[in-house]
Structures are given as structure tokens and as C-alpha cells.
Image (tube, rainbow, N blue to C red; front, top):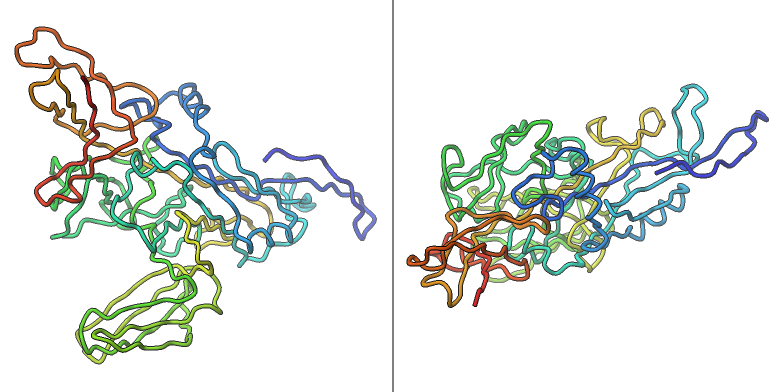
Length: 416
């Protein structure tokens, strides 16, 4: 945030001080469907081209970001200004110069280290999931939580999303699923190109990327997705006649003891009343009178019946100093990032000019800008090739999700 107009006030020691607005924090949202050009990655462009692509991108067209009611109260109480920008959001705070540290500023109204600012993110573009590399399976009852609190110590600054999971033997992955080579110290990102259960190492089923200064590996992924409890948390046992025994902890690891009720049925159901507890991440460990039964669930407590697509949660103090908003009360003004990866699909060309459907061998990235050249003679006997158009994002054929024998997601292009 640019410095606002200075306001002169008198301190207790009769010295004149200047009040102005400084950035408390900023969140930039980068979506590579809009930033990339065809197969050219935004991160590898020169600065002029990067700026040009970024100037075309306005996040306000696809996402609606608003403070929660509690956040609005906290912003007002601390003399903060919230602003939506084409790149994301920024929060400014009324500040005063630190007389002991030149060039440093403190909040005019002191910030508690436990203060949290929360923002609800809702989708405005109904094609968003079509061009974004996120799961197309039902996300009902879940939301993405992107935060600087580092609950699992696997964020890399400035990213608010966590490192993706590592490969699990026997698990089936769908196109677009992302994995990491290491759950804490990630050096490679694997993205499934087709439905597969193969290990990413050495497999053509996966796109492998190595991280460096020009290629960050941090994208919103399944590890950022949490089941949501809207005041009440419900857990149904998966074994008959197994009675639930639960231990509930908050994000700091402290055990809490809310009121619970066990509902009878073919399978016992545990209902936990969380309505008097603050919003945030909680974990519950389930045992039973069956010594072999164990389960662990991490969920987000949301004291609202309206579950958003994403919740952005920014705390004044994190578990890593680089994510903090202040240092000895001095403002650090961090700029955080949220990155969404653009989806890749297999392009399937159909129409009278083709003797059979034409599908290029490899999945190709969907982008708003740039064109990927696909040259093909429509029929084997044709001597001339034609330039084939790129697909729209209005429809994705997620056949790998619904057909046990299919391995691909398709974008169809009809040419008559």
C-alpha cells in the first residue's frame, strides 16, 4: 500500500509525530491459466512480458474475497483499511514511526500476537474448476484453507499453500493430481498426466518439474483442503458395534473437551458440539473398544452455515518468523502468494473433416492467452495440413473419473 496522507498528532511528551497508513500484509493470487501464454510459463518470461501478462489478469473477475464479520470488526478496531486489487487483497494499517529504529513503523493500535484476519473466497467464474488443476471429484463439505500459520511446517515463503502429499503405493491418482518428492523439503513437483497408480519416479504418466528460483513449485493442492464442521462435528464409525472414544485438539496441540453425544444405529455416530469454540483448524483422534480401530481427522471449524470455496487466514505471529506480520511490534509488511495451476487435458478433435477423432499424444495446457500450434492433415489421404484451433474451457470431459477403463480428461473441439 502506498503511504497515505500524513496526520499530525501530539504525543504525551509534547513531541509531534506523524501518522500514516502502511501495508500490514498483502496477498497476491497468481493463476497460470491467465499468466501463461500457450506452453510458455509465466515464471520463465522476461520481466517485460511477465508484467504484460499480469496486467491482463484481474482476480476480481473470477474470485470474490470478503472479510468475515469478525475480521471486519478486527480491521475497524485496529484502524485498518481493506482493499481488493487486480492481484488480490491488501490490508493497510494506521501506523506511527518507530522512534528507536529509523525507517521502521509500528501499528498505532497495538496488534496482539494471537490476532487472526480471515477472508472468505467465493467463485464468480463457473468455469474455474475446468481450467484449474484441482480435483473434479465432489468437494461438498470441504474447503481450501490457505494460511501463514504453518500448522504442519511445510509452507515455503511466500506461499500460503502447503507442500503436496508424497506418493502412496496402491493409491489411484487422477489427471492433475500433484505430488511432492518430499513432504517437508520439496525439490520436485509431480503432476499426473493420466489416471495412474504408478510411482512418479521414472514414469511417463507424470510431469516432473524441479524447483528453482525461476520455477516455484507451490500450487493450491489437496493438502490445503479440509472437511468443514459448521458448529457441529460429526463422525460415523466404519465398523459395526465399535463405540467411539475421541481426543480433540486445537491447532496449538492443546486438548479440549467439548460436549459430545453418541448416536446409535448400525454404526455409532459421534457428534461433537463445537459452537462455543473459535474458528480454526482442529484435529480429532478416534479410538474404540475395538483395539484395532484408529482414525485421525483434521477439520476446520467454521461458525457459519455458508461454506466458501476457500478461506484465507492470516495470523500476526506464525511458527516461522518469515511469515510474521510484525517483529518486536515493527511492521514487516509481507507479500504472500497463492498460486493456482492451469489444467492440462487431452484435446480431442471431432467433425466431418476427420475420418476418426484426432487426439494428440500428450495432454496440453489450457491458457487464455497464446496459441498452441496443432498441425494435422484431416484425413490420411490429404496432402495438406491445417491449423487446428485450441479448445475453450466451457466443458471438460472428465471420463477418467467416471469410466474405470478410461485414463484421460478431454477437451473436445468440434470442426465441421
